[in-house]
Length: 231
Image 1 (cartoon, rainbow, N blue to C red):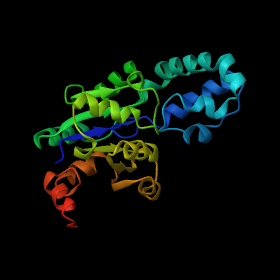
Image 2: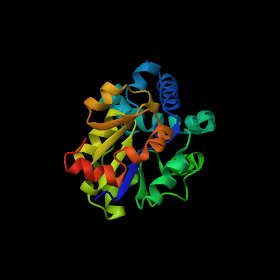
Image 3: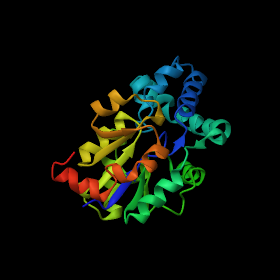
Image 4: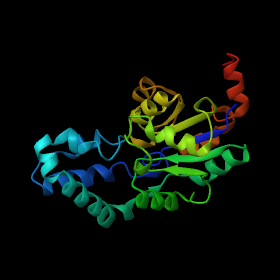
């Protein structure tokens, strides 16, 4: 029986996914590396520890990887964080889920201070039961650690929960945990890629998922019917 929903946040609850690659592009340029916005954008959805080993050699990573990440983080907070906006009807979606008796968690690769700001921007600071950040996991998405950590906090089995995310990496991480995943198109990935990564259903964004709640996999009634093979 469905007991909990686990949400990603960047690109799922808040419109931030184009701001992160911009900060990465600026950071790589600051340290003399040619990494385009498009190249950085292809890594969004993975953990924040992924771009440096993807684009830098082991020598450069050891030499100035930490300094580059520190510069990127400061740049994002000072120049781009203020531009992050919530997607429509996120609080309404959370309240709909709570009214249905579901626990709500956020499983994010964002740093703790950024995560708290995102929850504030989305208007759901007081509507979630648990949250994770990179400090709760050894490996970031697409590894399953973040989802495993948040399920442990909720005391819920993966078979009794669903994930909601915007990237193929969310679906891959969720599936490795044993979670089914709902995909949202608001993060910029296309439906074909989300379904290929394992999403069982896809919606334009949080507002559409809220509007279709009673006919979505989030509905306990529909989940029960799906379990009996009813479509």
